[in-house]
Length: 175
Image 1: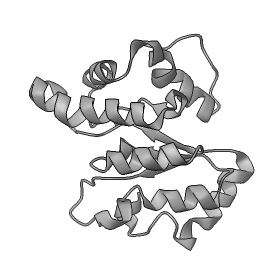
Image 2: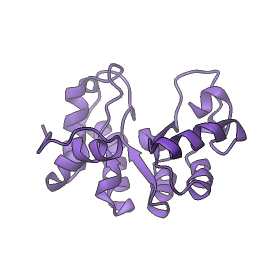
Image 3: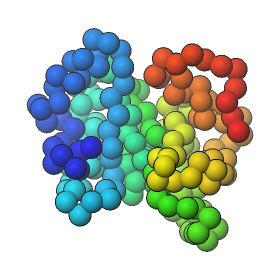
Image 4: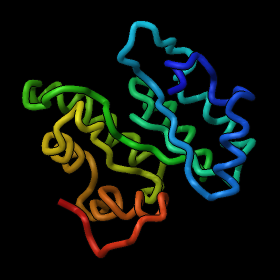
């Protein structure tokens, strides 16, 4: 929770966590981008700061949660450049997505997800996420289905996370 704890991703404070992540081959997930608290400091949550730790810790996998929204282009560049960085599309907007217009859903969610997915040129490093319970699953699944080509649904909705988090693989989990 970079913006909430007021530390950059490359702060030495996190070094022991990166060492443990490497030792046990587990990913590190960063909350990046917008924050829901007026006490958060957004400069710490800029996804560009994750580039530094990705370069310094090439054996550790990092996940940029929320595609760093509203800095999704920066987050996509960090993932494109660093093969150990993944993007999670959770929590771009909070609340019941049925209450926003189709135009706004497209502009604020479908378009950034689609753009980031295409930009990183690595479907295996893109993860579905809803940020449930802040966002109902159904609405978020619908948004992802509009943004991600159907042929990648199994990967994005389940297999990529199963591989990254070493979960039991199942044939398909696409909705």
